[in-house]
Amino acid sequence: MNQVITSSSNTGLVAQYYSYSQKYYRWFLGGSQHHGFHPLDRKISERKAQKNMLEKLAKELQLPPITSNLRILDAGSGQGITSVYLAEKYGCRVDGVTVTPSEVSTSSKNAKKRGVDQLTDFFLMDYSNTSFEDETFDRVFTLETLSHALDVKKALAEFYRILKPEGKIVLFEYTIADDQLFNESDLAVLDMLIAASGSDGLKQIREQSFQDLVGEVGFSDVTMKDISKNTLPTLTYLKKLLFLFYCYSKWRGTLKNHPNRLTAVEVSRMANAGLIKYQIITALKSF
Image (cartoon, rainbow, N blue to C red; front, side):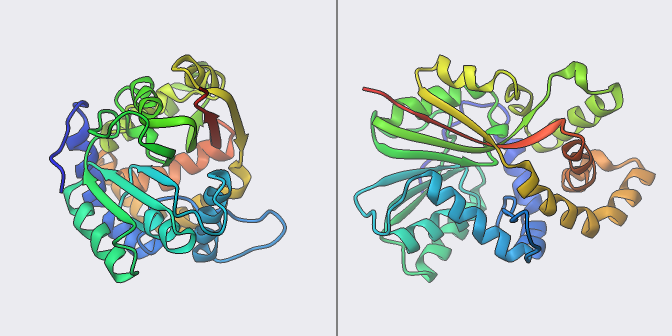
């Protein structure tokens, strides 16, 4: 296990949030910590949608059937579900970094159980300030974790540093509208959510300007694709499960202590209003 590298003052809060949230992810999403990808023409189970999202990620990473020569960084790897899946199915080498200590051991156990412990490594490390050498990775991806960066531009610059020339970043992330499109109540809810989950980067990932921010650190061929309609069913599913808990916490005045309940209800509402969108952002590191 690598030593924690703390370039961000919110890493302790992020670790606390994920430690607290593990039970929710285990109960409702099978340990996954991301949305599912739902087809628009038919209903499928959330478990199937979770797998669809991993396949969508693999496609954006441009993984052929066997890619053992590729080295990939899972920036914010959680319990290792995604890293293990990619290593097992595509034969690529995946390094996962997380700031939550318990997730390192959980991920390693998952990898060994699935027989890919030789293809995966998990580190207690801040992805904004890693110990990897320059030009280490062929691909770097985030799956709903960039919002936890204290300084998103710094995190992107670190991704650029550790990518090989012609390497690719793939970011599956929320973007949010400009503040003037939110009412005061919504902004207060966002601030509560950010404070409770260490999501300081959320307000830096703006729909209208994020592509420019990615380009500012040196990336080229920046693209952004809106898949909000495919992810809304996950929020609807979580809202149904947590709505009564949300109401109870709101009545008691303790919502600030339950970011998962806030997300399930309030983020769902803002997403349906188009204020928060789910995007796939890709970019290349040119020679």
